[in-house]
Image (cartoon, rainbow, N blue to C red; front, top):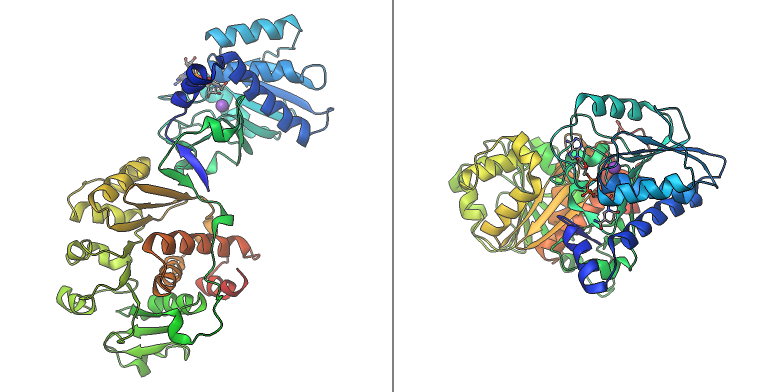
Length: 466
Ligand SMILES: NC(=O)C1=CN([C@@H]2O[C@H](COP(=O)(O)OP(=O)(O)OC[C@H]3O[C@@H](n4cnc5c(N)ncnc54)[C@H](O)[C@@H]3O)[C@@H](O)[C@H]2O)[C@@H](O)CC1
Ligand SMILES: [K+]
């Protein structure tokens, strides 16, 4: 798990004031970190071009050129003339050792984007946009200095944004790198130290980035056990039973001792897999309920109230987000909500927290997750997306390990089953959500077929090899 920060300006300021480090020292380490990355990964006959802008991001780039010059064939390309105090100083140092400057872009093996970093806002003018478009077509290995140029503090991206293969980011991870919109631009991310260890540079934060290594599987340490030892998941089965069957099968595979579909249908008609049970009422030993997937209009609000009139752990998805009964369910403890953006917009509206479009939500995902969790601190929220956000009370986590492989009907039903299974096995709502989500993304990563071909059945099948 790694810490995430809204901004790092205050962390830099702490280095100056509390650790007596200067801006020059911090920048030298930033540049040195980038130089080490290049030296560790590329041989010294590679041709390197560093495109620089007028602020301190550009200054980082000029310092990098100075560090590589002599060992590598490196040139600077000034997209804007140096303006900040540090950029002017770095320019003087680079000039003193005759670092080559090129007047326009050329092909190269390694390209470093140091046009703008955390100081960027608004949009680029036409001239810079044209340069960026050309940069994006280069065949070189592309490195972004700190953040890809065009990525804003909010995580939104300029119309033309640099497409990095790797982003070498300074000091600590910024939240903005993990807004869904940024996912196609950042490439792989590495954090560079700025003159003190990252642990000392970082301060307290309530936002964290999940690593796949954080995944805890529901392994069975206790041998003296029976099926009831591992909980009983009840999946409410509505109009589209396929969704519930996938959820239930995922729950069974992920360790729940018993899984029952609960609904009004004659189960003979449903042709459900033999490993699942079917009942018209909640089994008395139910330990968790999954509800909402494929629900359709099968149950009235009142009928749902009957099923949910208990204090069992509950995971809610899909159709339930637009039903009135949701307002009562939000008062429960032990509840997990897993909406996709459209469903979350509907939830925000029903709860009268906000009336926004999906586009607005996507631009401010962090903000709206915080808003919801503040209003409903007893719930655990998982907002689906390219980068999943999980929030509970004042703790927030981003799972960036998902991929477009998961963009398929039924993926979400499997996720509900995984989380429901962990709830049934006694995990807390937050732990069940974190580990269910990590398992879900790891299943997609483990899948070796073509990225367009992953099905919910493949996910379920992969659970045994997690
Ligand atoms: N402050 C520090 O201690 C450190 C800063 N570092 C670097 O400094 C960067 C931040 O530097 P700055 O605050 O100078 O900001 P940037 O260099 O990221 O951006 C500011 C520059 O971008 C230009 N700019 C802003 N919006 C623009 C737009 N729409 N179109 C064209 N140009 C635009 C401004 O005119 C200004 O010259 C970080 O991203 C990082 O790379 C690192 O060296 C680490 C240490
Ligand atoms: K940059």
